[in-house]
Amino acid sequence: MMVKHKLFILEMRRLIKATQYTMLLYIQASHASDSSDDNVNRVANQSVENSQRRYIYGEHWFRC
Image (spheres, rainbow, N blue to C red):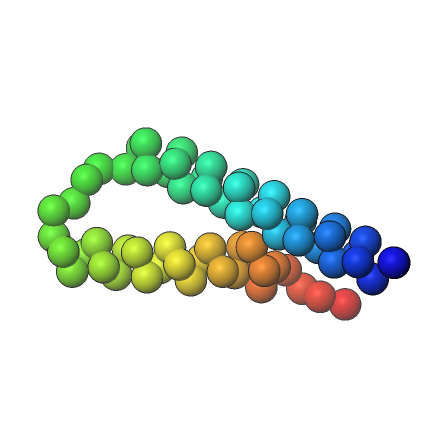
């Protein structure tokens, strides 16, 4: 029972981080200018995916 509880808490934390990250993206996008260059957009999307992974899964934090 305790393991299910811990897994639930971990999943809720992940979802909260994902929501926070999405909100940050919307805020940043509202201040950014649009680019019509496909290559720039592709690189930007890849960068967003990488930073999202680091943010959601805590790869930017030091773990003890």
